[in-house]
Length: 182
Image (cartoon, rainbow, N blue to C red; front, side):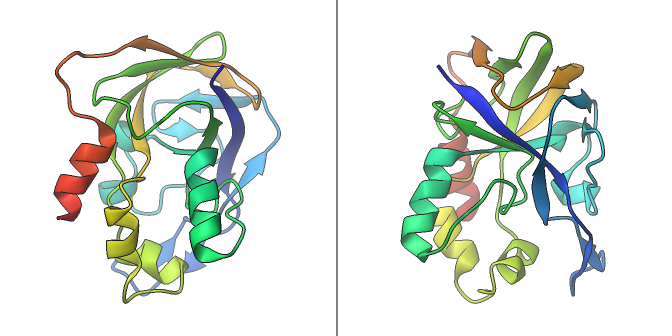
């Protein structure tokens, strides 16, 4: 059964040469339960809400299976939160999720898939690879989805993830991300 393995919030803001001047990409797991509201996980920070936050990008989910892929590709560990994700999952292909798909996490929280992550220069700088990381990440078609919070509540590691609604004709996250990357 698909489940949530980690909930991650910002560890510290880092100076960044981008327009905002700081980045909140450095996230680490916290013990649950964690309150989830319209702007995401309580105690998290979104330094650039225009591109990486707000109501339609309140949470970012990344699968352990995709982190394992990158760990093998890069020859390094990709711990929960390292890609800036708030939710680390296992047992659900988050990139096959359809835009508009809804998931229940635990007993109460409901989220909706809104868009794929589009890799940016901040992410490339975080990975110490400004030259090739954006293209490498995009072409792998493992972007992970941004999520809108439909129903607030608390979540904790180990909570089940249940797909509760799938729009029939909507595109998959990996396909929308691929179009943006191309």
